[in-house]
Length: 301
Image (cartoon, rainbow, N blue to C red):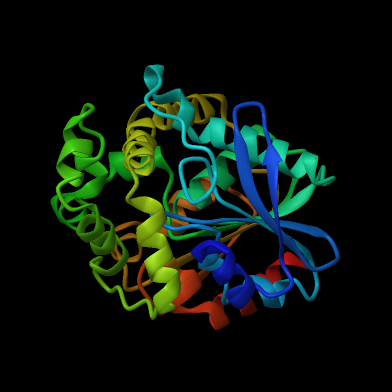
């Protein structure tokens, strides 16, 4: 049994692992519980394990699906691609829809944190007929993020700008000590106090420091600065917004909470939105799992 399989048994009891073949590669999915389908998408540099404090309890009422996004964990990891298209959030979103279709779920509720929240938002914009309710954790959309970046944001979220440099510049520098780099993202953000499960933390480091995972991380951020902003501009010009009820959560001690007008930004994208600040930093699922669970339970019904 691998480290990841052992952790799944301990932290996500009752969830069954399966490999789902999509058009472009294999995605790891874990499914647990019964009831209306709910897809939960993790952030960076993490895996599906980040939901261990929330997902087992939501599985009391929902058929919960946890995946490793492409480029992370045990899912396939495309390399460099023209225009960084392999890591555009639109590409991620289409693939996650394939996963849900393969599992027999056409329409579903959707929760995302960090990178997963960016994928979830894009899915709700591109496929409104599929998403019943959307919960977003601690992001602002790419167009708004880069348009409103200040010197302080650039200092705190330095890797947003480091990782977008042309290949292989950031990849080569990260290779010098990938464990320190990934660990700093997990523990070094302002307001960050996540009490990680020690073995889950080790799994995040192990999963994010392979050569393929490092390339994937850089490509994801390059796509954010190119493809994702372009898609946001198209939506804004066309007046497209998120149709479903949307819950926006953020850590009020983190970079997003301290530096962006979250309510104003998200009201423009999701007219039917409600807001839940959390007394923590960026990694809400592991810093405030009980509060997040309460908010999700009230919203997802």
